[in-house]
Image (cartoon, rainbow, N blue to C red; front, top):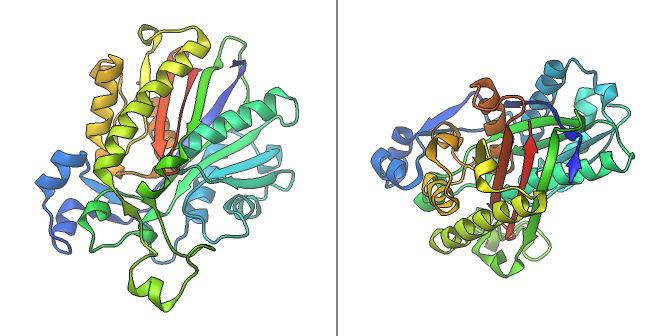
Length: 327
């Protein structure tokens, strides 16, 4: 599909502040055992009071540039996938562009929920393939805990903050993106949303009183959609590349819930040792989860040169997708 175009470098950054399950026991009706058995999460990193999503994205960008031994001026475009920007406008991408001094880059945000990093990876590959850009900085960054109702145990145990950044460009001809699939289903839009603050429900005394500025989620309904669409996304991306499950060396799914990850792997027939899981450390970091997990897989030597990687994600919208990459 886009052979010869892939990830040159990848890195991440998460806030230093940590909330464990035991911390949550003190503020909401839950237990460490309840959270671990239902989600697989043990702790999550959250924004400090003086941090915002752009700060996480900036630090991840600086780290990945240093790892690649590249200068900010080498970047032609910055795309940030986020559902939790600093503000409606300007874009988080423009703030990052200013912060790192990427004076030659144009910048933008993409809102595609937890599937955001997959969306922007394919978007970047297309711009590189067309010759419009040479190097693109793609960042999944979230500060979703700013929108958590800490009195709602169904959501407050799930989310964490963080950012993962990758530099995309030309790689060896036999490496890079082998296949991909992107999809959406707006019929599920009301099952996971942040109702107030936009043009439908602008901020008011009533929206504050009804706690409408917090994430609302119907988890049981989302579970079945997520398992089905994440699994089918991988199958469709494999078909686009003429590959099978047996060709995969590593599967990096969106880290939303350990039970979802296990169900998807089982449905696809992927063995446990081929599945990258780090949800216990970070919780659901939405668009940041896949780049954070890929970076850790590289650090832990689970992803090595020449291996075939598959990703898959499902998020608000509904959005879903997958890409395959020979590392």
